[in-house]
Length: 82
Image (cartoon, rainbow, N blue to C red; front, top):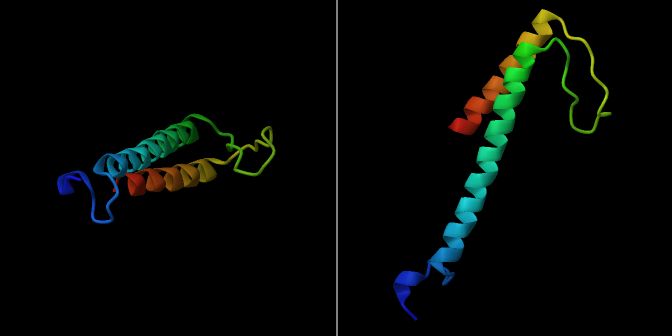
């Protein structure tokens, strides 16, 4: 057993790296989805369905509501970047 091949809890380093890469992959997917939602907020005056709502439940937004949805989505995007 080569100690350089194992982490502090005797888990193979390759398994640790795979788990880290899986977490990075999930973060990238969430980042791209958030960026897409932010862009859609700018290009549409309709609200995107929220999680748990009817898929066709789309409501018309005012300009102020659009800006607020964009601000929220953009903030989430920048939080993910950090």
